[in-house]
Image (cartoon, rainbow, N blue to C red):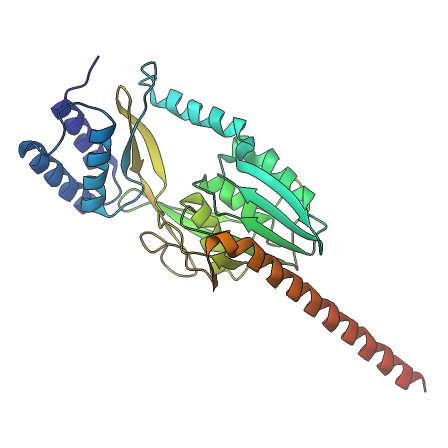
Length: 317
């Protein structure tokens, strides 16, 4: 069945007014969409072009990069929201739950490349296995350049490996326009060793989005990682997947993160790198920084041992 244009826009506006996290922006978007419809600004056929035009107007009204329509070509796509989510889960499973690569580099430096950080219930064992494989390295590079999203629970789980206990508050997520707020703390128990007392670098670029940005932002705010690369896309709001019509899916932001350290988040501004270089050069630069830090730490440790040995020799005399 083909969905009429006015019906689709009415359904979109209804979802915005009922569930979007910023009521004032919902009203602005509804007004713009209705005005554009009356002016005949939209193509009459519901298809990819219409979804692009509506997404552009939603961005214009709300300045929210998460809020958008997605067109799916498959005529057999279910209209059930649960099935849409299950399809995403199956896609992530085929992509190894986002863990594209775990690598050991000369100098004993580990690299984990992530494309997405899916729900913890499904991705947890794979993420834990990746951290297990780098446990004996002297420094860790998290390649978040291709990381397009993630689940808050899984982001918290992965970050927990980099802190000593369950007493670090990573972020809060405010549900709906006014709360309540859910606090995210590091896990007190993990299925593997923690990665402590070693430098961590996170690589970012213009494709780093949502959950990838969350991990980079929280680690940077807490001083646990050095961010290397380019400014990220700037999409902070967790979203729901909603089926509006046949072929048409809505990504609807329903919450917003707030850092207990900065009091804000990365929406619209992106995560700002500590070391700003082209994203294509970020791995090489982070690798060089890690090698330098390891050499410095080794020299300092050797100097401390020599000083202790000299002190002990002087005392015995």
